[in-house]
Image 1 (tube, rainbow, N blue to C red):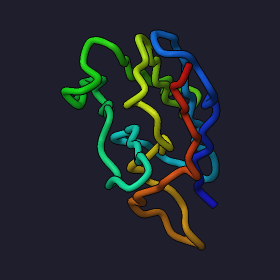
Image 2: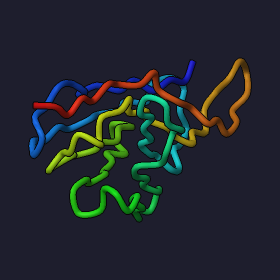
Image 3: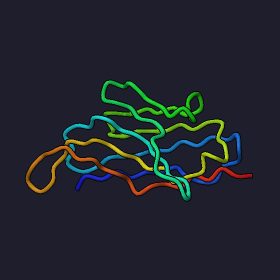
Image 4: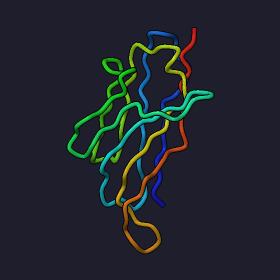
Length: 123
């Protein structure tokens, strides 16, 4: 079974930093885009940052200059370095990836989500 597992969330003071990690596991042939989304209480899930197989990146305007997405293709992992955190960054952060992986006896493209990790920015 192909799955994503996030780690690294927690409580941090405003202005602090956190690094989120996301590991893909299972029968994986290749991974195209990987990304981080977040959902704050009472709000819709939004894209935070994404990184493609050629390492090009895309960021939400609200995090540009503060967050950095990266990936390690050898380990099937993506990371989100979050600096200068603000209270409005508080949310559950989800990892997402487009994975060519095995389901039952066949390989196909899968849109996979992690279970989420909570980031709380508060003094």
